[in-house]
Image (cartoon, rainbow, N blue to C red):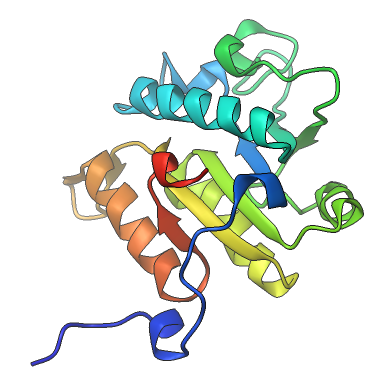
Length: 197
């Protein structure tokens, strides 16, 4: 039996990661909400560290950079006026880097992200952030419909344990890996952040 291939491989798609300087880096929901409390992610700190290194390289290379932040209700999850809803300090946006607030998992839904990306004239986007199976996945899937070529920096993303629907739990790392495998089939290239230069 032969090794399985993704639909992208079978279609002969270009599987080389884009150059950062020719791409848009989109940081999704890297907010304090995921560092502590009910939504704390087991691998949040490792992913944040990878995102910090990637953001530094992206800034040096001239990438267009966009920060997306989930905006929840006051006093609840993702309250943007509270510390819990703030973007992680080590990834704080520069004045030239737009912050786009969203209310849904898909970063394009109800936002001007698509318009802002189009204004750069770049077709390659690199996604990092939280959570792999939710907002990163939703955004990558929508990006395909918009004609964008998406790369996900796998080690700069993370997710959480989930109930399996049968009384058990699926570990965050399994959820993360399965989400990436699904996306790699048709929606995105999957790369380590240090492969993006």
